[in-house]
Amino acid sequence: MSDPHPTSLNAADVERDELEVDVLIVGAGPSGLACAIDVARRFQAAGETERVILVLDKATEVGHHTLSGAVMNPKGISELFSDWRERGFPVQADVTGDSVALLRGGGRHKRLTGALVPPQFNNHGNCIVSLNQVVGWLQAQAEELGVEVYAGFPAAEVRYEGERVVGVVTRDSGIAKDGTQKPTFEAGMEVRAKVTVFAEGARGNLAKELFSRLGLYEGKNPQTFGTGCKEVWEVPAEIGGPLKGAVQHTAGYPLGSTGYGGGWIYGIDDTHVSLGFVVGLDHPDAALDPHALFVQWKQHSFLQEVLSDGKLLRYGAKTVPEGGYHSMPKLSGDGFCLIGDTAGFLNAATLKGIHLSIKSGMLAAEAIAPAVSSEDTGAASLARYTELFEASWAKDELYKVRTGGRPSLEGCSPGCSTRGSR
Ligand SMILES: Cc1cc2nc3c(=O)[nH]c(=O)nc-3n(C[C@H](O)[C@H](O)[C@H](O)COP(=O)(O)OP(=O)(O)OC[C@H]3O[C@@H](n4cnc5c(N)ncnc54)[C@H](O)[C@@H]3O)c2cc1C
Image (cartoon, rainbow, N blue to C red; front, side, top):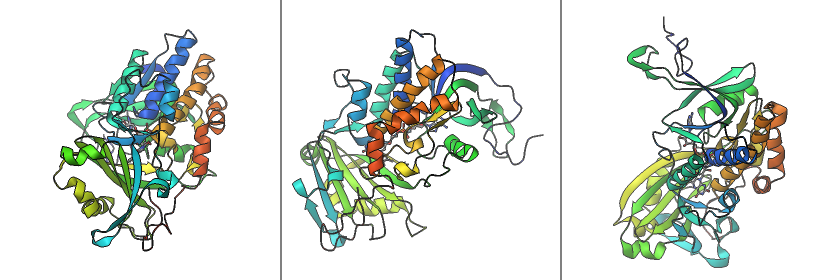
């Protein structure tokens, strides 16, 4: 008889196909794919060309759950591929300038440019990318190195032996709401791995379970989160052309003095802009609605000047981990590592996580490859990842924002009530 209150998404006691791999990576975002690429290269360098590296992603195609426009610090990708530009890494525009607009009610705003732009908004040397294209490109690089990437395979459960992580089970399909099997039922696959890497992004289902089961947040600050809404718009060339490469941040309206957040608009090319608004969820108003704020923000005349004759093309929303260094979980344990947003690799002051995600994947790879080769993938061996992180620029950057790194614009402008903004 089926369980009327199933505790997992998967049916118990069904026969499953089993797959054995050396390294399993859950999530094909920038962190997961960077990790796969670096592990594959390390195995190749060691002459271990038979090793199997598998990346699973729940999206039907890699990148389908990834929000587009982003400003990327090239520090991570240039370590992964020193010739990233020559290899055709998809850059949409190099940043040509930054500004901050302090938005007020009544459609008013005041613009800060040049030396008045606070340092966390400085994007000199960064580039505007479509994250969707970036992960597509990384997937191709990974596959060239022999990595298997399976899209459309959500990992639903972690498999343990005692407290050791030994892999995952992918989600069953064809289960009714009450947990019974429909005629279309197909059992998920059991994937067993020497090392499982969790790269699910912020608040991943499997990572949440690991955090509580293995106490990975003991002695740490709890993680804090923000929600970001993002859109890509097509705009007339006379509007979009002058904005190409420009990164404009906004502070103030519609958040009051109690809210932490802000907006941005990036010029992708002559006829496309990417815009978004992110707000910290540790807000005194429990009924805070990030999407409603985003809609209100878009109605400000500063945004309307760009959007009024434009057309919405793509949209999405996602969570960001904002806690900083002291809110990062233990990064590894028996048979597993945590990377990217899953492990809090995001600089909340600048809202940048791509370069840190890539770096975290590489740092984990540096620990994982020799651990697999020496057949010692226990907690002590994989703790090398934490040591490498502690000695890296990623730690230095995240330590600067160790309690979230909320910047302040107070005093920038009389009447600007924004406590912090991006
Ligand atoms: C609104 C917004 C704006 C941002 N802007 C910028 C910016 O301008 N610059 C910047 O550097 N960073 C930005 N970031 C942050 C950046 O997007 C992240 O730091 C980065 O994408 C993290 O990479 P990741 O690989 O850790 O996770 P993600 O990119 O979130 O990828 C996780 C992947 O795992 C998959 N997945 C999740 N769970 C499972 C599962 N159970 N089974 C299988 N697959 C699974 C997902 O489908 C996804 O493909 C922004 C974030 C948001 C929300």
